[in-house]
Length: 274
Image (tube, rainbow, N blue to C red; front, top):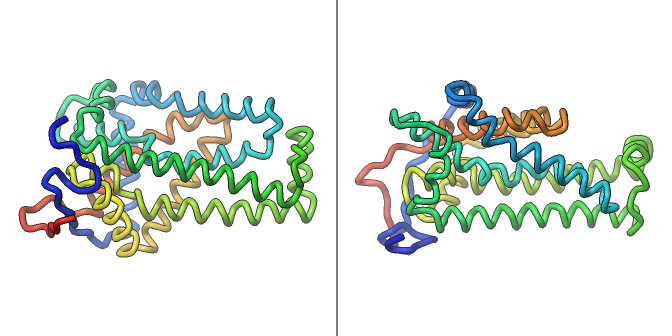
């Protein structure tokens, strides 16, 4: 890989792509196009994304057998934190389909040849760290309310959470903390990975462009985050099986959202030395 770089582009410059204002119709259209991309070769994408329900089931089994039942819900909801990174191959498929290129499933692995791979890895690592911090926060909230004693069983824990004031406090504090983590991920990565696949702008520009996209379209981005969260919950309920369909659709839709939010590359776009 020539010219190894992470924070800036290959010329050591900080690029500022132009961000558009979008409407709710753009969100719906992005989701529709995501469904179309998935429908083009659904068996390929389901195969690729079977890893999500399989990992979900493994993690659930692990928490159940490791006296960590209280972490099942944080693990399930944590998919939303690493989802933008996990869907990187799906963005590549949508990019190739847009340009009329071959979209066979193995092209999802072509991201390993991207000149922006170091920047992608840095932002992906950031999301993994946020995911681990979320689990630590969720465990800390549980410990502050219940001490170090783990739940005796899943059924007993659900009953405790839903029928006691301490349980409702756990729900409230946990969801508030989860919302904060989700907001951070949305604000820093909503278009970061598609942008890096499309243009090698560096990690700083990718995160900064995502932040500007959210600040320019706060209501639309909040609605997008809500749509993603609802679809992930729906996909997780049937033993995570629905994630094999929900994840590729959201991945493709995120690429089309990027196309609506960020202006195409132009020679006169702003560049500053890092």
